[in-house]
Length: 66
Image (tube, rainbow, N blue to C red; front, side, top):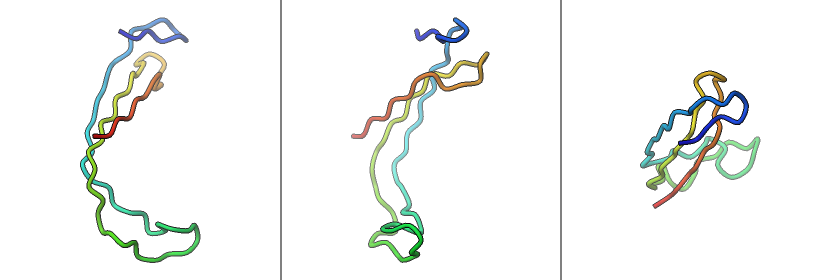
């Protein structure tokens, strides 16, 4: 259990999984729009956060790739 350092409330653990990413329309250099070499990048990523409902803030975040 993670406690919010600001208000002392319990935080909510939320997790999400992402399995693909789409390249930005400026994939290589800012200000220059060009096609990337791939349409989609496959990767499995897990994102976990501790969120304080009382403060409406994310207290901690963890990103892990597989």
